[in-house]
Image (cartoon, rainbow, N blue to C red; front, side):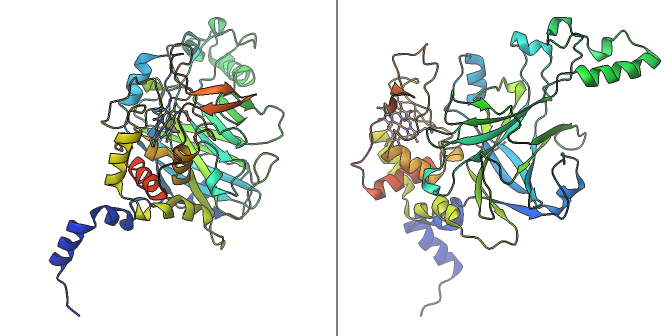
Length: 419
Ligand code: HEC
């Protein structure tokens, strides 16, 4: 046996197996969040609870959602220039409930006040998304709002100012800001009580959805949950938000046992005109339960298939088969920017199984088109929800399995730099 010096090993790796080395070194490894068990009822905790000290945080990345464009050129341009955001996540369980805490930097605190009605102000916000069915890791819901037959549950909180509503009808023009209130001294206490009773609650909502346009708010209390959101100003480091959500482990929409579950996270930056689908979004992140031996089929399916992908070949294949419709990264050759989703961040917010399925069976999860009415020449799908939808993208069933993996390996590299 010949002993190799470090230098010659480096040379060997450098020359022949650069692309494979990238994969073997864990470039495709998914982060995992651990939910820690506490011996206390966590049903009512918020961001400030001391229980969070028992959980270790995991850093995940939320990417600008560039597959979605609003009918607002300025907002779209701002979004295209956005970098990806780091979000620190902690998870807790008490055996009955599961709770998540998110922490992310945002130098500008944007709170929605009355002006939002005039569409000039947009709030910061966050969301946590659960897959209703997750037993088959190959068929998880589409990351942005689920897809037909693959529902999701979404908890959403927006930073909304508490406004005094004299008549409780939400007539913003007639609302009086506390700072300009006609109350003084002892009346102030009464004023605060009135505000607490009459103020519009901060915006906290739970939805179920099976794709865009199918979002349904759960208002009947069939699932109890609690959210919290606080801005932390810091003179020494970057200011930002903390947000938390608590929900039961099991309700009629999502059932969580001790097995790993996929959860996704999103944050909105009001200052960047983020709203609706324009946001920063993570891929499905695996959440596992501390101290519980469980199967890791989710993790295997997320990472394993790419170990033999040749990223360079994938890049070439994309130019031949995909660039006529899709723009991505520096490739800007699509016949029109409205032909197909921009894939510049697709590697950030998509799982490997989703990307494989998008190429082989594009009809399974259909991304809605940009401003369908404004750009009706570029329909992304035919048919509708009721009659069934067919994607405008052809199914690439003639590509070999290896070619698909190579493409997916390359797609996984498409993502914005982290800020
Ligand atoms: C004829 C135009 C066309 C070609 C060629 C094409 N696509 Fe698409 N693609 C679309 C359209 C339209 C959609 C949106 C509808 C949908 O989701 O199926 C889409 C959606 C996608 C999505 C999902 C995007 C998202 O945001 O989730 C991926 C991934 C994708 N294509 C990858 C590819 C790859 C890889 C190739 C080449 C092998 C390719 N496409 C070739 C038109 C095309």
